[in-house]
Length: 253
Image (cartoon, rainbow, N blue to C red; front, side):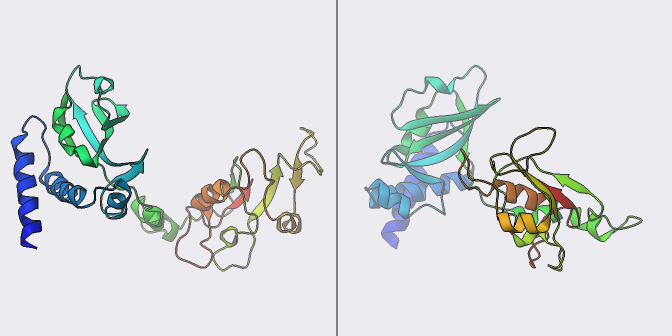
């Protein structure tokens, strides 16, 4: 433990010497730990296994790459960072994303035009919080409003693919009433097609939708994106508290 603490302190001291790039204290501390782990796990695969989930690391082309967000100074061009240990990502204004090989973290302090850097955040699903973050729960309960608004008597049309017509989230919150009004499967050629367009298959009843099960596998293969999108818009939650925005609306797919 003492040896590990000494190694981390030494790494922190080394990072402090490089003043040309500003780093928040949390990033300096995390980089010191990553540097220590890189020394202990020379195998990139082992290093990723021992850091992913805690740090923004990924195994890319056989290397453990660490994700960063940085701020460039005026006139800086990250495409000029000619370094095998650095992968340049997307840029928006002065903000630049990039990755650095964990075995060469010192390169962070050699990138021209970089004023500030911090470890990239880990993306994680937060859809279970969306209703509360957007105050939709207040609208659904009618708090501060003359009535509650849940999407009743509203039709939501979703143009997408990957619909599971049998998914329980397409029932109401009591799991008794089916809410998909109809669907037009562009790739199912058995018919009947919509009269105006002459291709695909219309599914106009609950029985037809349940029998079909899902839309037809096509160039995207069987997928789930449409179910995901429709669930956010108005999913009933399938008996769980994780519901969509307009929980009483009906759907057209």
